[in-house]
Image (cartoon, rainbow, N blue to C red; front, side, top):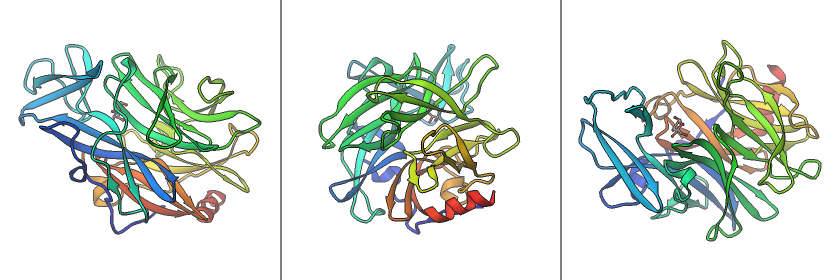
Length: 348
Ligand code: MAN
């Protein structure tokens, strides 16, 4: 099943539409945008993944320390280099990413034609961000936009947060969840007087996995009362990893969350889940089949193929304008009808 109505204009943003942040660098991927409305326009906060120019037989790792980039170039044939996965490689026992990501704004009046800003909006700054900042989710609460994103460093993959009211000045709140954790989506209204979020810690040592959790906070920075909301399902499309998309949507029936799930072949699809209004850690309904699968050429082939991944949407009455990363390389848009998704949950 695929309930997504993709725009004919897809991909709406490709790497060649984005200016590199440094002379001599190249934008390899533009993906996984956070989405929001601001001053009557739709804003996307894009993840831009770049690397310095290299020869065909080379691999490069980039990191940023105290505001400066450092690089490591390795010949693919060199002993000890393992490069099966285009996203990362290990060298002398250390894992490196092949690109470094920053976050950059793009603006649109109609939701499909975006003007991408010429320079990065948010760059890796703290020591917990040295390998880059990725996959932002934007939640607006009382006029403040909270940006939760993945902070990657040698120390691990964690969740950091910044906030802004004008998209010009940003307050860095540091790491709000330690490694290994990602896919943190703040709800856009308080529940029982508290800020709440979904997040995705990863289990090690045979217990736990890559499941969606819930937490509460008095101030959006300090999180507690963690609970496991839902787990991966053996033998299904979401058997390996699941993670929340953007902020859940409040409907008459409860909170609707569009989430991603991957299988043993690292094929990423989107599913839907309905959660109790007062107790958002309680699952009421969960789709058996995905609501969106990688079927279009730009979703099946690219930097990392067979991927549709979302962490941003904007609501227009009963339509969800969903922004998503396709094949880890492009930014795309598809519309969903809210009633259709709810109805598909009833049928499953
Ligand atoms: C995974 C992928 C990459 C990402 C790293 C670190 O390997 O999602 O795109 O860079 O995790 O977050």
